[in-house]
Amino acid sequence: MVHELAEYERAPDQCHLTTEQLTSALFATAPALFGHVAVDERDQPIGFALWFLNFSTWAGVHGIYLEDLYVSPAARGTGAGRLLLATLADICVRRGYRRLEWWMIEWNPAAGFYASIGAEQMSEWVPYRLSGDALRDLAAQAEAADTRRKD
Image (cartoon, rainbow, N blue to C red; front, side, top):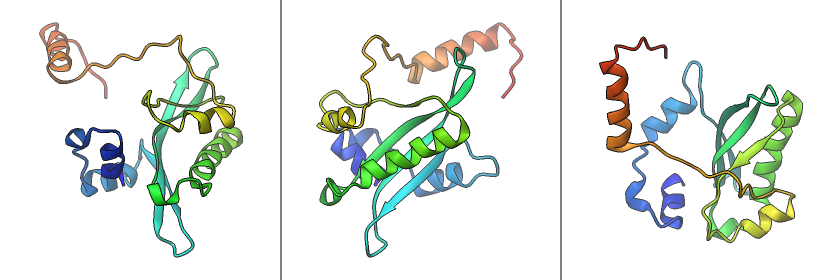
C-alpha cells in the first residue's frame, strides 16, 4: 500500500521501500517506526498509518508525527481513515502527548476531511529537507572537523 500511496501522490519512481525494510523498521528490538492497519469485514487490509514520536521542546512532551496515512480508493469514505486518526489521537491522549501532526500534499482532497475533524493547517511553518548530495556534503564537514558522533 505504500507503493499505492506513492502512485497516488504522483511520485511512484521515488518510492523504493521494500517489504524487508518495512518489516525491519516496524519489528526491530527497539522500533522507531510504528504502524496501524485498517481492515475490512473480510480482514483484508484497506489502509494504514505509519508514525513515529517527535518532541516539543516548548511543551516538554512527545507527540506523534504521522508520516503516512493511506486508505485504498475503494475504501475511502468508509470511516477507515477517521478510525486510524482516532486511534493515534487516543494514543496521544492516553500517553499525555500534546500533538498529532502531519504534512499533506497541497492538492490532496483530504484537506476538507482534515478540517472537519478540527485539524489546523500550519501555514506559518515552512518545511525544509536536506537529502542527497547536500546531505552528504554537510556530513563531510563534520568528518572534516573530526566531530565526535553519538547515534
